[in-house]
Length: 539
Image (cartoon, rainbow, N blue to C red; front, side, top):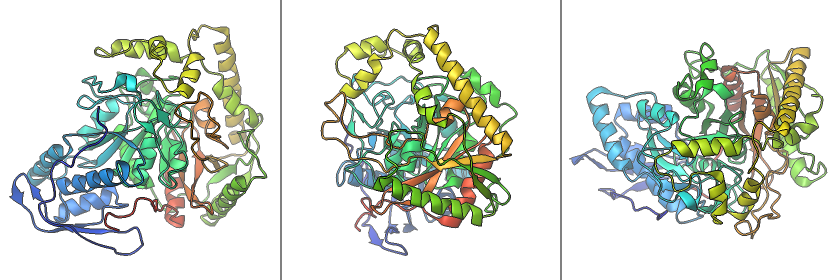
């Protein structure tokens, strides 16, 4: 299957590009033809735009859906397939412009079709789409189309969204490389890893190859790529978002959520994808827990009076606290803590008993994957492989991923080790919630990573144990292990221009509160900035 695409329709008139404002701003002035009818000149800044700005431009007549989609397709071609080759995109929707014209016609006859009307979405290729391949980042599923949509896809399409592309991912949801599409690269430094396994969505949204994105998070795969891409990434409470149509890994920690450039866009997207789905019965726990709107409740003063506990102790025991990378991340965290205080929050250090064991406890769960993977494959229409064992025995999986998968075979949730894991997990949950109760906390904050992303090893595609120090300083396991929601927001940059992520963690179903905290912090600090490697086209 080719990973390149041709722009399906060239612009009917020349594009005139001019800078406006900051170095990354761009005004595109161009004439387009939609459904064969000439349109007047349209002026719209594509880079760093938001859902609200796009919809306002539609309503003012300054933009069409086709024009918006055409601009994103051009950026994908320029920066993902050529230029720095972030390799964030797995499959471009071949009907994107056709769908855009349909949405333009619907808008002309009745206005916006929903809260995501013509919002181009970058969807992690772990989620099924009825009309595009779903490969899970693996050559084993090259070209495979399941002919059904995951619930999250159905809900976005019903809200008017357009899936512009499926994004590259770490093979079978681990790390940042796979046999299907190769290495994903960090948009802020293509020599470094983009975190994983939703690295394609992270680099793609960061580089303005789509407007919003969807990631999957078993142990940190939304928040890690968001943190190193200057994005907002939300891992919701596990029962809040349906996983139907997504290849599972560990159902007790698997979930999906937004990856966006702003907190408001994350809240709008969560409004669309959250809530009960009979195809994923665990979501029944969300009934009565979903507000009328996550987006409507966002306020710049949300941090006033909040009680927030700072976790300073690294959860990754291998991180060198004397290293320059650690020092630079810690400097940004100290600045973030000062900003939280300036915004009216009570912020103080706390200690959670046994916090140093969190990552080890999370990694102890190797018992769920084989059973649920085999059950999922059994539901698919004519998949090329029908079991985790057959996938591994193919000999075609990336060597590092194959080594990890081998450790999952022959284990079940009936093993004694699984009970030991569950007991250890529950002890962590009790310690976390007890600490919150003892200090009357609304949330914890900590660095998503205590260290910037490391360079990509030369042998990462061939070595089962590449020396790339992947996920160094990782603090992401606390959220999946407890089942509590966590929100990562941009917290600045290191001296080398690498993004740092600040993570908020709260009690179950406190997404509205966490989004409020993130919104207040975002509005006051304005840390988000796009990667220099993906400037405006022509710039």
